[in-house]
Length: 204
Image 1 (cartoon, one colour):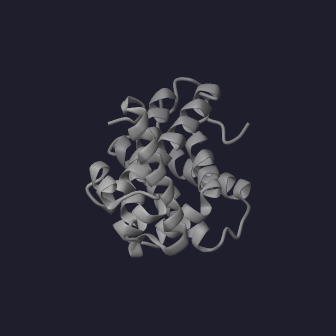
Image 2 (cartoon, rainbow, N blue to C red; image 1 turned 90 degrees about the horizontal axis):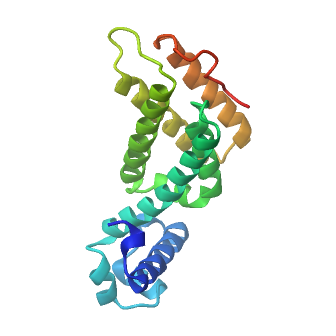
C-alpha cells in the first residue's frame, strides 16, 4: 500500500518507526537490532510495532521503499528535464549513495544487503530499458535488451558498493564520469544505431 493512501496517524507512526529503525541501523548495524530496540527508539510499544509490521524485514522493506520513492522521484524529475540523457540514473545513483552514505555503508555490510541490492538492481535495470527504448536504441542480434540493462545495473551497483567500502577514495563527480564512460563504451558496441541522432550524451 502506498504511503499517501494511509490514515495520517498511521503514516506518522510508520514514519517514526522507520526513522527510529534507520537511526539504529547506523548506530548498531541491522543484524543486531531487536523489535524491542525499535519500539524503545520510537518511544512506542512492541504491540504497536506488530500492528504495522510482521517483523524487522517487513520494516526494512518499508524503509527501502521510502528511500527508493525519493530516489525514483529524483530520477524521474531529472529525466523529464533532460530526456536525452541515458546516464541520468547513474548520476543520481551516486548522488543518492553520497547523501545516504552512512546508512548504505551499514546496510551493504549486513545481511540486509541482498534486499538492498536486489531492489536497486531491479529498479536500475528497468530504468535503463526505459531509457534505451526512449532513445530508439535496439540491441544487435542475439543480445537481449534485459541482459544489457541488468549488466549496466549490476556493474554500477557493484562499483557503488566498492566505492563506499573503500571510503569513497575518488570524488563523486569523478566516479559518475568513469561509471558513465564504462557503461556507455561497453554497451554502445552491442546496440544498433539510434533513429534519433545525437541523443546519447555523457554529460551536459
